[in-house]
Image (tube, rainbow, N blue to C red):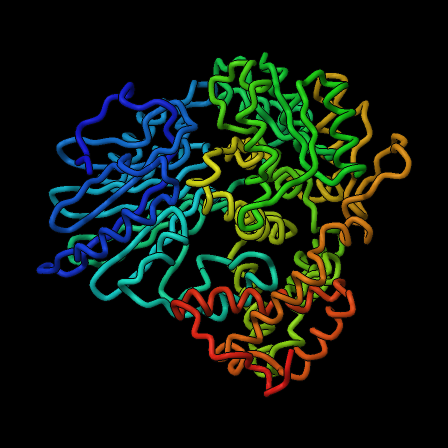
Length: 611
């Protein structure tokens, strides 16, 4: 493998990085060859990446990365003093209105600041990225995430080593050390769809927080510092310009600095407003936009997306959803086929593997999942009551009927205590924003986890301007009340060119309804008929239940045999609406299995009864 040299910007074209590594914590320690080989083998699973790995190593550290082709800039920096890798783009902006630095220049500035224990460059970055920098003389390692922690870094702290990676699957592939299930992390994934704070489903493996620097010196001492806190932003000062116009200008700038001089780009376009706003902002920046929609046939999402594309004048493709990779909606086979199609490539996009996305719009600007009652409870310092209202309003919860009572109670207690701990850790000027910050710092950006886990296979990067830190700062500094129920969102959209609000959209339940007539007879994203169409077949669910029950060690530790029998009987009768019963056990099983290595199957674990 190639050693890391001094780099020049033109050495790399279309770089998009995945990286991993290990630091030896003991002064006389060395890094086992087997461990380095496992990291090499797991950083990418794609056959095209064989022989394309880039490495740096000395007697204390081993770092490996692969660039898989999306961003037109180098993802690494080297000098006689240090070596550094970056995933994503820092978008370092020296001052308001300035053009952002090139990706490698931003990485160099961030790396040098880390060496000097300064955070000025990091605080000037508005992009989504993560990076690693290593000081050669002192053997000091620095890991850093963007202000929202959108691009993850996972860190595994062991007595003799510290391992790190931009994808959890890389650390899961390491067999040199054994993993242990972290019940709280698994409980939170089962309840909220993501582990909270810095937790993961494994003991000793944490995910860096938003706006965090983790440093480890040559002796292995670990230091964690947050260079950015969203709850410390001052309240916005009165201005002559309406709030909607000011936030609109921030969004336009967020899009423009990412767009640069590109003439043709790809973007998702659904039947909602988030992707529509992104497309309109791209067009305002002078770009020709090729859009894609992947949703169920004859759904509001599909038809309204098509109508919006016609009104906005995009080159649109709309096809039924195909198989996803690990549930990642951005890995859809339709999108991959489209990105490789002659019709799309004929527009000559400069970054053909980059898709603009409206991810983050609903939570960051639309304030979905929140209502006035939740906000009032947080302002009254009634966090327990606020949690009850939040869970009821969103119909979130942990269905643990198939689990043993002791396990079920433990999971419920851990998931609730985890949420309360996070809520108590933030102290914004407007107390009503506590839940909003909880969502953007936990649940919202982590729904992209599967996308980052599978970058090596999908080979597709996202541009997510709703996660721009300057844009979000402008929102967080305002009082929350006008933002609830998408009310402010619609005022904001009126700042856009005509056309954005001239086509009906799919509104969230209990939010400001769309005033325009909807085409009749279309499936609605949140109705029971659409949910039924998205469910797995009873046969697939029954196979999943049998797998859970057939894992003897897991079933004996976690499952209630009688309830599993009843669940399987219902599934055999075609009652796939009971799929929710399998969710929590399936999450536990997934990470239990990855903590115990290869499955130890000893026949059906259900008590001597044929399944």
